[in-house]
Amino acid sequence: MKVRQIMKKAVFINPNSTKKELLKIAKKHPNTKIFIITDKNKKFIGDIHENDLFYMLIPNESYEDIGIDLAFDLEKKFFAKTAKQVMRKHDTTCKQDDEIIDVALNFARVEINEMPVLNEKEQVVGVIDQGTILRYLRVK
Image (cartoon, rainbow, N blue to C red; front, side):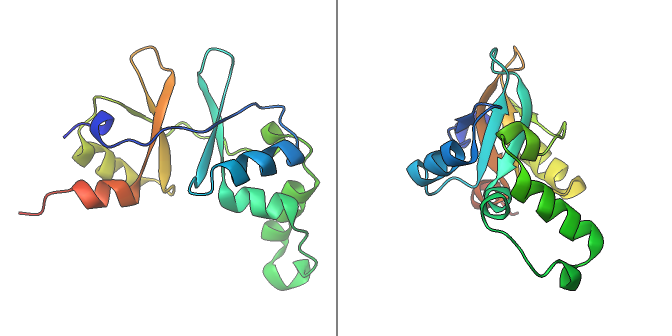
C-alpha cells in the first residue's frame, strides 16, 4: 500500500503567521496535530505540532521544576512572534508513492510522530502519522 492511499490533507501555515492567526487556524482544524510550513512554492520548511502551539500561547511559570534546557525551549516558544520562530526544522519526509512499511520503518528511526508527504516536485501534498500507518499495516 502506498502513502498516497492513506495520507491526510495537510494544513498549511504561512511562516509569518502571528500567534493570533495560528490559534485561529488551530480552532478551524480541531483534529489536526501538525501544521505544515512551506515556502511560496509549497516546499517544506518546517512544522508546528499542536504541543508547540500550546506552549507558545500558555506561559509556564515553573521553569525551575522542569530543567533549564526544557525551560529555555518553552520560554522561546512563548515569546515567539511568528510561526517561523517556533517551527521545528527537520528533513524527515516521505514521498506519496513510498510503501507504508518503509515509512513505518523510518518512523521507528526518528523521534517524530507525523511527517510531511511530498510529490515528485518536492512539494508538500499531505501528512502521514504513525497512528494512520498502524491502522493499515498488515500483520502476518
